[in-house]
Length: 272
Length: 199
Image (cartoon, rainbow over all chains, first blue to last red; front, top):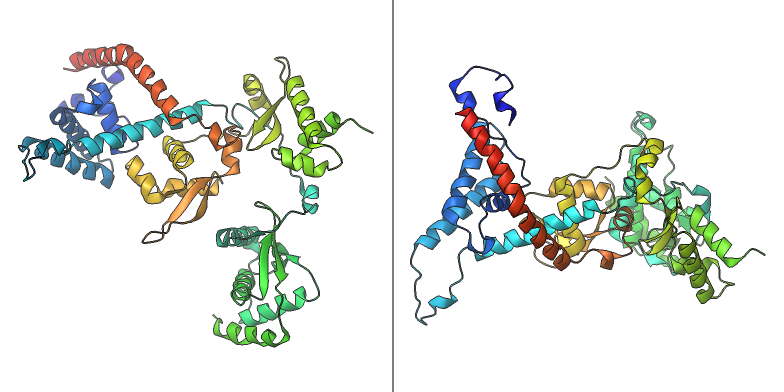
C-alpha cells in the first residue's frame, strides 16, 4: 500500500495504525461474504468467533473513521452475537428427544449468504454481458410521425399506475416557466367533468393527453385528472389503451340520459 | 413489387424499438407468416457475417439492428454520450427483481440485507423496472418486475434468456476456487509486507 511513501497529513502516532484500506461493502451480507472469502473458511461451517470478531472490528473502524454506519450493519452485528451465544449453549434435548432435529443456529444466515452471493454474481454476469449503449448500439429514432398509426388491436384496460404515470408525464411537460399567478381563479372538478363530457359528446374516443393542453397551469391539469378519475368511478367513461405501451384513450361509456345529472353533485363533493 | 425480405429489412431498420414477428405479420398481412419468418431467417444469416458492422439481434421479443460489441470503442467516439454506469447496488437489485419477479421491496431488502428504497426509485425512473401491482398480503405492498427496456438494455430475447442461477453458481464455484489459489495469497502477502513496513 502507498501508506509508507506518501506523507501523512499530520504527524501522529496513531496515523500509522490507519493503513487499512477500507473497502466499500454493499451491506452486511457483502461484508460477511468478504470476511469468509478472506479467511478461506467453509461457508457451511462458519467459524463464528473469527468472523464475528472481524466483523465487529470493521464496524468499529467505520465508527472511528466517522463513517455513517447503516443500521443494517448493527442489526447484523447483534445477529452474529446472538448466533454465537446460541452455539455456546448445549443443545437442549426436548421431550421428544429430537436434538438431532435442532437446526444449526447458523443455517438461516448461511442460506441468506448463499442466496445473496448468487444474486451478486448474477448482477456481475448481467454487467459483463453486452449492454445497449455501452457495447452495442441501436439507432436512436424518434418516430413521432409513426405514432399516428394506431394498431387496431384489442384495447387493453388501463391500470391505475399507468394512468398516474401518464399524468406524471404530462405534469413533467408543463415547464416551470408556464407558471403564472392567476388571482383567485378557482377551477372546480365539476366544471372539468362537464367540459370533458361535452368534448367527448358525439365522439368515439379521444386521446388522454389531449385533455391536458400544455398552456394550462398545474391546478387546471390536476383538476382535470381528478375529473377523469371521478368519471371512471361513476362509470361514465372508459379508459383504454390500444396496446400495453400505447397511448391512453378515453371513451364515453354507454350512459343513459338520466345519469348525466349525477357528476354535478359528485363533482361538488370532490371540490378541493 | 419489392421482395418481402427487403421490406422486412426496411421495417426493422426504421422501427425505433425491436419489432416482433407478430408485429411484422400484422403489418404485412398480405404475406404468409411462414414467408415472413423465412425472410427474417435469411436476413439474420446475411447480417451474421464477421465483417458486417450491423447485426440483426433478437431482443425483447423482437428484432433490431444493432452494432457488434467489437466495434464499441469506435462508436463511443461517435455517440459522445456517457455510457450508462450502473452501481453495484443497482445491478444487485435489478438481478434480484429479474430472477424473483414479482417481488416486493421487503423481499429485495431481505435478500440484499440493506435498504433498497432509493435504488428502486432510480430503477423505476430509468424504466428498467415497473410496478406490477400489489401483493395480496397485509399491508398490500407493491410488487415489482422488469420491463421491456430491461430486456433491450441487456440484449435479452426474453426473461428465459437470463442465465440460469444454477449456471451462475457453478460458474462462481470454479472462479472462487481459482481465486482462492491465487488472489488471497497475493493479497495477504502484500498486506503482510505493508503491515511489517508500517510497524
